[in-house]
Amino acid sequence: MLTIGLTHYLVLAAFMFCCGIFVMTIKRNAVGILIGVELVLNAANINLVAFSRYQVGNIDGQMAALFVIVLAAAEAAVAIAIFVNYYNNLATIDVDRGDSLSG
Amino acid sequence: MVFVAGLLTVGWAGPAFAQQAGDDSSCAADKLVTEPGSMAEAVAFYVVGGAAALAALGCVFSVSIVRMAMCLFGTLGCVAILYFLMAASFLGAIQLIVYVGGTLVVIIFGIMLTSTSPWVRYLPRRIEVVAGAVVCLTLFGALAAVLANTDWGPAWPGVEGFTVGQIGEALLTTYLVPFELASVLLLAAMVGAAYLARAERRGGDK
Image (tube, rainbow over all chains, first blue to last red; front, side):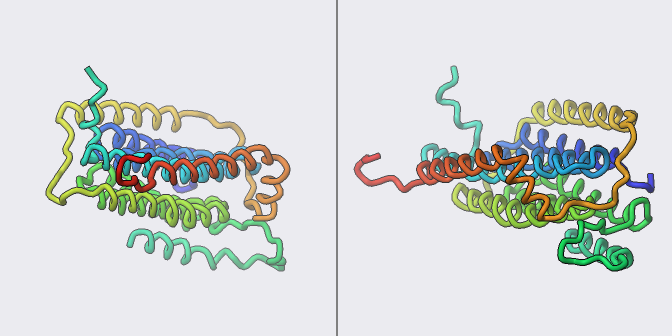
């Protein structure tokens, strides 16, 4: 338990992943759901860098994590633009109100 | 505050192991902040990892969206410190600059532009919370059990990370196609976000 190895980082990443999908499940604020997505992406990044550091030894994990950070930034920008449109059209940020296409 | 505590922990442990003999700092490899297997590394990991887990739980249990964004800020900062612990210094710096200074700022701007009255609380239904908690706890339990009982094989015993030069060289040689595709994707995201968030003209001229 005192020698930090691969499993420690993987369990921490799994915990953050489960927190992220729980946030995605229960939040009704659209920006809250986006925050859950960011938690999931960070958990995946911790996994990638931990494998690169403790198991594989080459640079591939860090490069993949770098590209994940880039993609997360682009995705957050587009998502916020969508949420601003949603708010302007429905006067609320509650995702449960976006049900005009259901039923 | 926890982020500063984690930074101080790493900073306390760092200088004791930073006195390597005669390395030229012009292109020195990314030395580990703490010696592998030492008590300082364990303390740093448990403090920072515990702070990251607590911040993630704060994201889960916060009702206010602004509090959630602040907990996400704590999570991202703790993950950046974990990158520094894992000898991924460039990635840690990029995490702080791009993720905290870019993505989180965009999220906070989104909260500002879509904010409602502070007395409006969006609470989920009880059945949703229970079902989600059961699923997520089961998933975490299964993942932790599998991860703890897996034999990952011989570990890489290296103690050096990668320099920024190596990352740059990899970006332009091995990872050239993803690099160019990412630049095209960023251009598309910029154009798309600017178009989606443009101001509507009066008179319905879209």
